[in-house]
Length: 233
Image 1 (tube, helix red, strand yellow):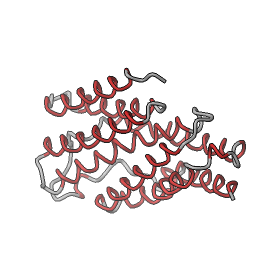
Image 2 (cartoon, rainbow, N blue to C red; image 1 turned 45 degrees about the horizontal axis):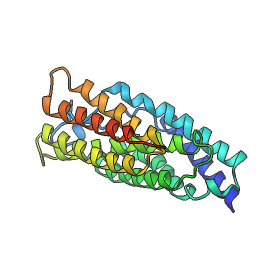
Image 3 (cartoon, one colour; image 1 turned 90 degrees about the vertical axis):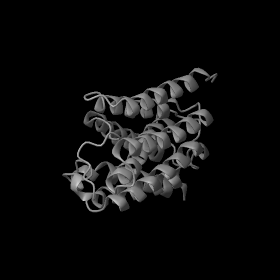
Image 4 (cartoon, rainbow, N blue to C red; image 1 turned 180 degrees about the vertical axis):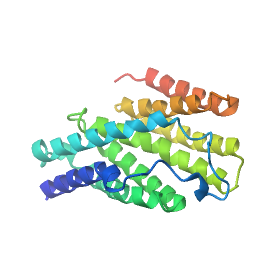
């Protein structure tokens, strides 16, 4: 039975990684898909940051493949597989949905993120670079992406001006990231990935300078680094 779970997770990771080829052309939400067009929302990281998906795809495939072929029946690898499978299956659906409905895509990415965080907390201590590390990067980026989606919804549907919407989105990301990193010191790549996203937000808001958004992102970076400084493991 555990071999079946390992195989399903690996298959889901492969299909998930193939998503950009199966559903090509997605470059982010269409600015015109919102009642208030989001042409250059301050909550969104600079475009280069999204290249991290390549690393995430490859690492998830490598990790789940190792889990299938070398650790299929190992008890240390079993607890995280079910929530990871849920996250990956939803992720397979996310890309085509995101091209149609930002609202539905926002709901789905929150499901992806929550399931990924559960998987990260349930991951064992063996083979950290193939079990914990890919989950940490995946969950870290989803923490940022899910929160960015909230900022886009708030600004795109006119519930808040763009800068306050960005501050709410960043605030949610930081609240989640700080709690997770405080509780899970053994996964430093989680916080590093969130920092990657925050640096890209700073870059995106540097010209012209958005002091409020940049300031919150900088504070978030220092907050995560401060937590890492308390790590005694």
